[in-house]
Amino acid sequence: MEKQKFDGYADKYDEWFMKNDKLFTSELRLFEKVLGDISGKKLLSVGCGSGLFESYIDSSNIEGVEPSEDMAEIAKKRGINVIKIGLIEDVDLPDEKYDIIYFNGSSSYMEDLSPVYSKCLRALKANGRLILLDVPKESAFGFMYLLGKSLNTYDHEYLKDAMPELPYPLALASSGVWHTTEEKINVLKNLGISRFSYYQTLVKNPLYTNEEPEEVIEGYKSGGYVAIIAEKN
Ligand SMILES: C[S@@+](CC[C@H](N)C(=O)[O-])C[C@H]1O[C@@H](n2cnc3c(N)ncnc32)[C@H](O)[C@@H]1O
Image (cartoon, rainbow, N blue to C red; front, side, top):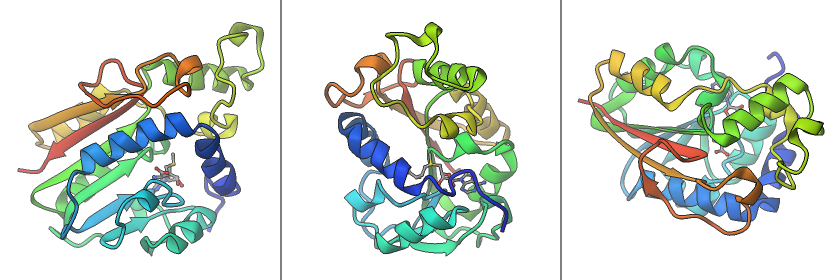
């Protein structure tokens, strides 16, 4: 298989979160809040990565799809049932199998969201939930990653004194396809979804995000990490 965006970054990815432990706790709080009670439910994690977040919850009913072999190998060791090492675009999902399908940070590495979300909506049971968690393009984090991407460095006078101590690896910021939250909402509306709720965290500026964990609050217009919950009709 051709080289994937996260190949070679599995260790760096986990290490970044472990060093930015307060930021990680904020994101984990959002993740746990939006998944809710998962006991007895069937879940699919699209772009499950190394299964880092799942290692903090009961992952016994979580299946995963992940294109990067390095990441998938760690996820398997953490107990995720990786059903396919490949792109979600290349997976056939059964109709109406899952209660929850979620993308934790993975939409931000996909160009064409509509066919992917459409496939996942078909694979959800009636009233099942599609949950999308991402760094919004319009957030301070989104701006920072796009500026780093366009300058090809974070070490630039424009960013002097404004960067967090340990920024997200530049290669992963640069390979991102950063979408706005409203872009994703509109994709889902065009697929017939009308029931939405939204939660967010990381409302502080990136420079201060790792000082202490933040709470989860409703809405999507302030956070550096935002969850859209879309309910299937
Ligand atoms: C930011 S990481 C998130 C990993 C994991 N969900 C987590 O929260 O730690 C994005 C993940 O999406 C995966 N990914 C990128 N494009 C994908 C695609 N087309 N289909 C499935 N997964 C994809 C990447 O390999 C990577 O593991």
